[in-house]
Length: 519
Image (cartoon, rainbow, N blue to C red; front, side, top):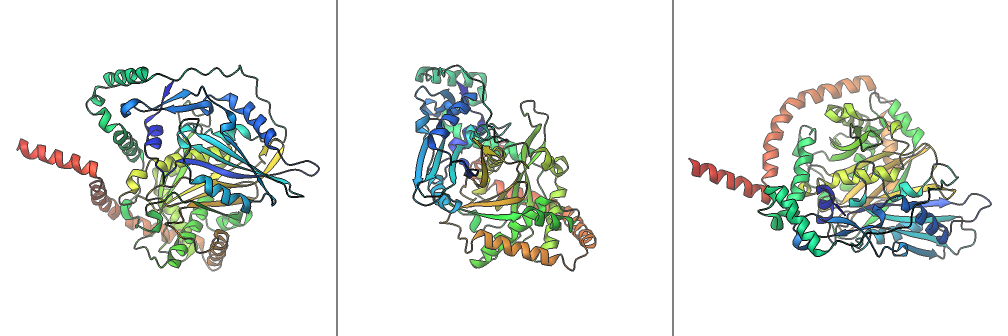
């Protein structure tokens, strides 16, 4: 039995019917010439052999009676792999277009808490000539390893066509579920060890966990100037359970040429500029004109001294203005770079080449955890409008039982105040942009590929008659003049924003009353 951390517990407390907090993806595999597509039985056998390497995928949540303490992970004595595998057989060939509607339907449903928090849908086809199979994977954020990002696909995929054989483990011997008496006794013992929790533990367990995580993250975050200027847009409205997915492909060489023409911008700046253009044009199509530039939260990997992180890195958040008020896309890209450069964590960022040995879904899980921590603040004046995650994937192909992964779509969680999320995943030849959104709140008027193609063409056109060095000097000069004034503005916005939170306003009023009494 292992107690959840405050963050993992918060991910359970914040979940509700309209806000399932799982991450995952859609994966399309292609059978090599002369071979048959994967079968359901092959996947089941493969999965059974791989999950024996970790206990977490065979453990379930056990809640403490009366919410007296955070929940626990406990072995599931009734674990049955068949409860986590679903087979769907199509009449037409398996394609990404056929997989997306199935994935959208799965994203609306919460994972059942009476069993381990993950599942996989295997999709095959009766159609003649079909050479593809698909997986739709869901993993709750609470189950993802906060240090390494390990989740289900990191166990299933290989970097070579030869599938590695895990060492045989002893037969699964689950411990019995803890009794109600044991859970209550442990909650009391924990409260005695932390006296400050004793007075209001039943009333405040949920609120204190969420508040503690949020305040710690805000304290640790190197916040930019002009912090609370993010406008309220359609992207920052309450969500329903409905989910929609779309994807677009960007040629990597084309992006590299754009980056080379705009020193010192990097690939992440170019991608943020493209998302800025897509978001701006979608809002314009709906007749919405934001009063201030859109702001993005971009999880970035930074150097870490944490011993439990084998990658030597951890994720933190970069909050950066997308400068959507700037029409010229070359200038906007350099301005985004200037905002990112001003952040303290920018200088600590790890080069993408150091991360490419990780399975992309592992970084997606970590990134989702980062922006989850800000969900409470988003219910008030937003810190940012869009989460944008850039995941540098491996330069080598990934395989499932010898069959290469040919397409992948990332599925991101949404929250009230975060009604859409963008994820980039790169490989040796392309960058795939995925967007998850709530169609009851956000309406994408055009296919994502069309918007991306237009944005790329506009960015390339803006490079034709630009002196990049002179443009960068101009951007630096403009940013320098904004910085000093921005910090003073932030102080007033910070206090105004905090007092919008009812719990914090009560604390403020109580403190003010105490001071008046002392006088």
